[in-house]
Length: 273
Image (cartoon, rainbow, N blue to C red; front, top):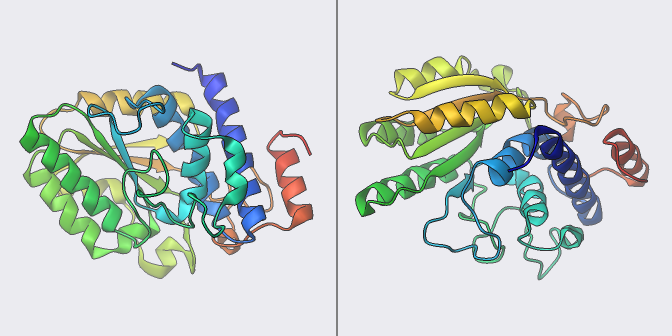
């Protein structure tokens, strides 16, 4: 188990390496990667039962990154957790790389589901949790989705099924950063109040600051204690978190930083030039 300070330090490194990978690829999604980092780091380092030396262990917990465009954050988290060398981040999106633009379960160790078509990862996670219930397995499935992704109808069909089957082995985390590629989520298609919607669909819900490690860990502990229904944790985040010129800017949804911008971002995140 890591201390909160250690988790924050890891998250800083994860953000920096994610940006380095996007810069090296000249393509990628920095905004949503930076907003989801604390969620992923807290889960992989202090909550989930995983073993980087045995990525396919039968009793492992599983995480599905349904907002698959935030793959750089997932890859960087996996790298710092020990699944592979963080230097491999510099191969992001390169031909032949294990680190494709969206997660590929057949290429990258630790990736549980190939995602990118919004909404499908959430549905796959529900199916995985149903299968574990039928097989009598005690492991958990975590699924991380974005607030823009909640505009997909397939999300809500799956949410109904999760409640119907009483999937208390399923925990969803919504990366609520308020932005999507076309601008403000509420301008494109309003999804808030997210908590009320999931509650109406039969889920236990809670809200948390998605950049507060202590609050995140407390939320996971409460979520894992819930019986008889799935849990949705709505994590309020900032798109582009940690980099002043990226924060809360829709234009950084899918754009790589240039050399100067990368250097500035690394310094702001507390890294070496």
